Amino acid sequence: MKKPSLIAIEAVMLLILSLGAVSQLGPISKSESSVLEASPKVSLEEKSNCTTEFYSEVRENYGDCTYYNNFTSCVNNSGPNTGCIFQQRTFSFHCKTGVATIQKNHTTCIPEKKFTITVQEGTKVSNNVLDFSDFGPCIRNVENGCLAITCVSNEDGAFNGQFTDCNFGKSCQKTVICENSVRTYYKNAQDNFVEEDPTFFVEKMRLREVG
Image 1 (cartoon, helix red, strand yellow):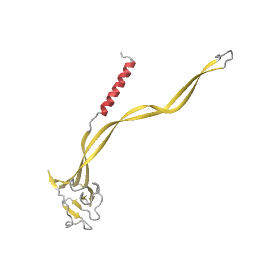
Image 2 (tube, rainbow, N blue to C red):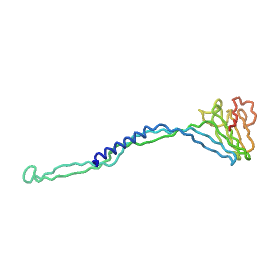
Image 3 (cartoon, helix red, strand yellow):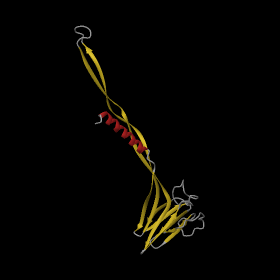
Image 4 (cartoon, rainbow, N blue to C red):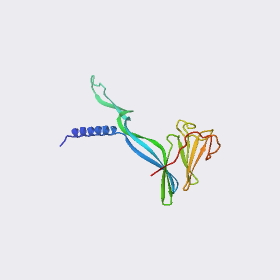
């Protein structure tokens, strides 16, 4: 039978090894999707590439500690150092009690910058991709049961790669996908989106059908 001290040492070693193994875990990559449904027959999927990274964080632990003050008190009634008694005083205070290693992780997701639009027409299902990686950032929402994708050009409107708005002469493209139609609108110098805008000069995006 192993001695208790050896068992305790082995337990500590296993704990140290397990913490080291967790801290040495490599990044985990996976794909995540978000889906927006405009109707039972029209939906949009956006994929993101996500990476989870692991790291260790050392945290100090604090608690209540006790200080013991031992001393001897003598009354010296029958000579020096006679009639002595042992006494002890205790003082409580807040102190550092140790450290703990916490295993943590954080996940970063980067969108693929393209939408996959699925439309069901009777028994036929069509899938189209709108790739906006070269155009600029987009927002998507639902308008009257249709998907509305509005994008602003990186060359003429986007702010640090972020969608802001389509005002003040910014170049924007809006694609509206319904169950039975797809329409594309443009806006630059016009007050509203129109199907033909002669002032729209950036390269237009096109829906690309995929299998």
